[in-house]
Length: 339
Length: 262
Image (cartoon, rainbow over all chains, first blue to last red; front, side):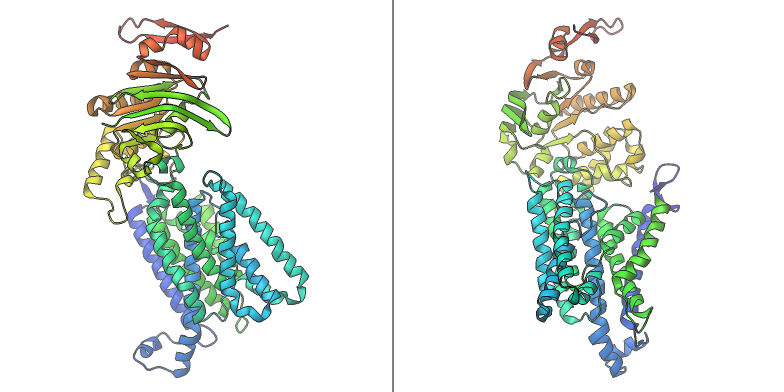
């Protein structure tokens, strides 16, 4: 973070308040344009002007079908997945006091991964159950890690270490399944990379309630997240029941991430990098960090998904690959500039 | 005014008994210094009386109520503690830090009120950090930073202020500044101050009561001039010390440890 001669907080010569306001507007603009881009572009492009016609009940019927049955639900899923993962990562970074914390750390990915791949490979006929099963797997893994890390309360470092251990344990299970059933791994591999292909209204129905609930809880918890950044002792001294708050916020992050992973597979990157990017740009005040992470998460996944569909059309790349390939260099650029 | 006392307090950390059957009452409106050798349990005692550590047996009473049973928020409205080695996010300003002191008074339905801003301004005024309010905490000097943190504690409007080695790592001028401001607060507002101190002369000059911890228990307690003597320093720290008259200021004799006791 830069400062001027008086030591006041500025960004690129602009006072932090004003800068933050502009950044919020920018993130909003990115989220909205990303959403529109994703909804209107693809194998068949729908002109922007036609949106007005749809509202009035006009427009081409084919375009209407494509928009409302294919693009819109997929875009909504993309937006919610991005939002959930980014907000979950932002929460976990403060709760675990660890800049490397992301939904993987609390076992969400490995839990969902093992459960999901188990279904895909072992009971392919039950594939319609993959989302709820992955969700249950994710929550179970998160609970497991929390119980294992519990000893006179919760210490972040113990959670992180227990998370790494449980994740590698479950990871061994995933690898074992993939090796033992190598003839059936194609679907499983695609799911592990994370993708949004053929996501539709049922997926929206699964993720939407958790997204809304999680976002509300995260915004309500922003004040507590700020205090947690001062350390456990100071937080307790300020009247915060640190253990309880930590459990509730971790549960919120688990809900957000588990619902996202269960509909979109193991989408990495967003949960770790989006909150860090936002933090580098607007600072560590969680009252701004949570909503801005949500917006930038929406923007990142919707834009990436659009590009993943368009870049090698008609071939579609999984969005996870695209996001990491584009996002990681950008993040490194920011990191070099700031630190 | 809030009273604070411990009765038959024992604390075990990782199977090591740190304090055994300690009883102390801290006088209201007075400054108490807790001193003792490294690892004697001074900070452990402070963490127990502040409610930070609730793993103890015996009683810690805040206004007659058992500390363990009080909600943290209720404690935070009466008592503020500044632990050792605190750190803030790199982009936090002094004003925002001090404003966190109002957190115990917030709720989901009641956010920062106008009076909060006034209380925060007053706290910064008292700790002489008003001119630094838009600076980043991370860019302040050690003394300024410590004053900013104490200002946060004052914004809690506590009746009891607990400080864990507030002058560690500060130069002599900043050490005295902290001790003097704290003493002024105590004199002007009758705030009870309990602090763990390293400097035995600070304890003599800036405390009304001294508690010496040694061998898991209270070695001595009472008026600083009577408790901190060459004799007790020899028994507690194993040093030879002598009292030197301050020829300029009669009331302020100093005690100087000049050698390890053989």
